[in-house]
Image 1 (tube, rainbow, N blue to C red):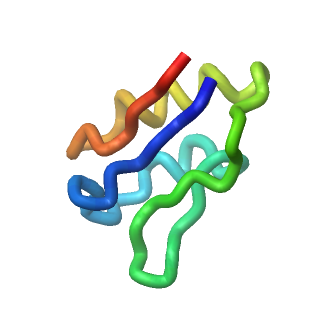
Image 2: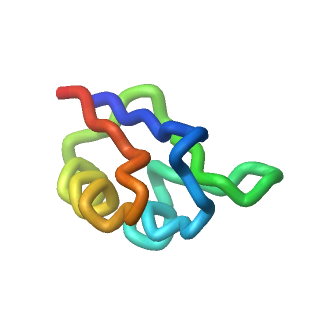
Length: 63
């Protein structure tokens, strides 16, 4: 699994960070960033919940 955050869509709510802080972090401007190149299997469910929780639909998951 690979995850992307579209910086043009992200508004900095950072629900993804709250749900999967091992995968997402906040940059200097307050927007979400992905900190792992490849998501380990034990994080997949958290990342999927984060994708669904994003109000802007800024998170894309590539299987």
